[in-house]
Image (tube, rainbow, N blue to C red; front, side, top):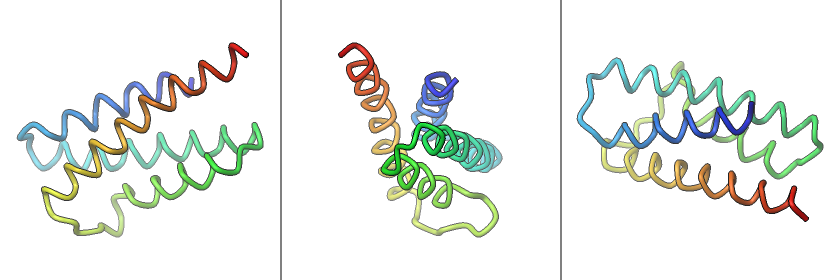
Length: 99
């Protein structure tokens, strides 16, 4: 399930680079908060404290209730960095399980 969440969040974050209605960005913030919260919980069950902190911080960053005003350009940069990080985490996880 974690792999599916990471793929969906990556697609949603990359779509933020396209000019979308404001409602889409609110949806992405809500979906990212839930997705990163689930990933943090799964990481805590596997006792990976580093990922718990990273996913928890991302859930707080993207939460829609107390918005962090970064501006469109900075949010685009954050979206791309987080999406690339999610893609990298998919491959790192695969390599660790193969060994």
